Structures are given as C-alpha cells and as structure tokens.
Image (cartoon, rainbow, N blue to C red; front, side, top):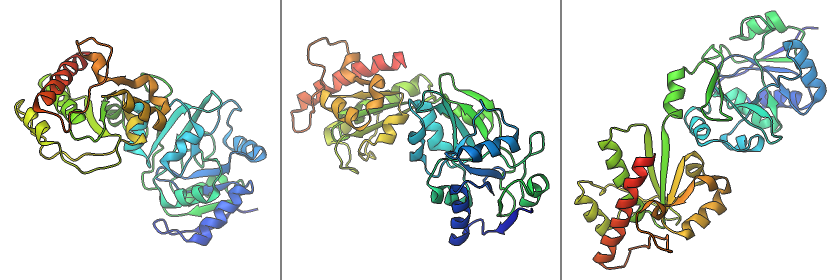
Length: 352
C-alpha cells in the first residue's frame, strides 16, 4: 500500500490540511512532516503501539527515547524540571530553530526537546495538542531526507502520510546539547555550530531588582557595568528591573546626578517590570529588600538558590539587610544608599 502524499503551502499552510495531518497523528498514525532542518516522522508519544511501530522503522533501541517537538517555548516546562539559566538563554536565542536540548524530565530521567522553525510543523504540533515526537524521516543508516521525494524512497508504505512542503530550508539536522548539568555538552554539532552555542552558554547574566527600577537597581546595574568594562569582562550581561508593574520611567534626577559623578550617563534609562523569563535566565539575582525577595519567589520559586540581598555583599554588618528606597528622601539619604550599593558592587565584581 502506497503512502498518501499531500502538498501544502510552506509559508501559509492550509488549515484543512493541517487538521487532517493532526487528526491522523492523534489517532496513532505516522505522519511525515517538514521542519526547518530535515523531514521528520511525527507520532503521538502517548500511543504505545505507534511508538513501537516508529521504533521498529527507525531501528531504535527501547532505552533510547525519541525527542519531543513543541510549538511554543512555554511548553518546555510541561516536560522538564530544574532547567538551568544557560538552557533558558539558549531557548531565548535559538528557539524556534535547529536546537535540541536534553533536559531533566519530570519523571527524573532525561528528555530531548525541540521547537522547529517551520510554519507547517508548528501548526501541526499545536493542532495535535499532545506530546509529539518527530525523529528524522529516514531508515537507520540512510541519509536524512530534505524533500518528500527522498522520504518516499525509504518510507513509502511504512508511514501513513507525507506532508510535502518542498525542500527543508536548512537541510541538516539540529544541534543536540545536553543541558542537564554544567558544563553544558554538545552531543551532536548540526545546523548550529559550537561557537554560536558557546557564545550564549558562556555569557552569564546578573539581574538587579528593586521596586520601581528608577534608582537603586539602576545604580547597581550602571556601577557593575562600569566595573566589568574596566576589567575587560565581556562575558557578563547586566540587567535591572522592578517589582512594580510600571514601565518606561526614567532614572530619578538624584540617581542620574550620582552616576554622572562616576562618569556614567543613565539619562536614556527606561524602567521595566521584572518578568519570570528574566528571572529564569539570570545566573544571579540581587535584590534590595526582603520584600523584593518574597515577591520574586512567588513569581519564580525555582530561582531560590540564585537569589540574594545585595547588602549581603557590603562590608557594613548590621541586622538590617535591606537597602532602603531613597525616593522622596534627602540628598544625604541618597548618598548613603549609593555608598552602600557601590561597596557591594565592588565585592560582587570580584566574585562573578
């Protein structure tokens, strides 16, 4: 029996064809779909008979699971736990795209996950709304397939449907990165080369958080950036944000003046509210008050071990580890706040 082939528009896939493919996958059929790298065999991971059939075609050992393909970055947390900041940075930079990340799964094992950069693949996966695996559409030992015609030479009669969207744009398999632990390991170098991966992985992120992101966190960010520049450190990204929902405010005049005396211009600063995505990709999060710490842990409890009060790094030792908000206070209070932050930043710069 020959495999059915359906041609589809790669950029604006027809809805009825997407639904037809998705329904077949949901029901337990094997459907070859295009991705940005190569063609893959999409299957419902929850259907044991389907996965067994797929494993036989691919000659895959039972102890070597297939990677999941997802349709949005947010879905990664449905299948993985304990995701490292470096992995979140890779997701932010390269998804959707030719990167498969091996992560810790929710059942305490490992799972490969990828978000392809192809309208047809994303539409089908989203329509299925179930865990979808999608190994390359070729027999074991055969070259990967970049077109539907190449797929049919190997798999005609072995799969139920082939969705033909023309040539796969990249024509080379995804890069596979083991991000379950540090240092992150490149298992297979594919469409993304090692240099691109390492450039993201090796760059650390420091995030300062205060209330409105208009004074204390601005001071901290500006001072650390200046210190790192003097040390010729280009491997650290420094960010700042506030726990309030307001955004787009400038730095306070007092903050601008204090930093101007340090040779730093923050007149172009615009405040932003802290987000869960910011917190997840940060290697260290430094806050000004216990209140900020509590708010952040409600938003992203998984960052607990990377969260510190900035005053912990200052030489001043007292029972109060809060750096109080100077807004509305005297110039002298601003000066005192600035001095504490500057002292703490000098220590932070030595540690990171």
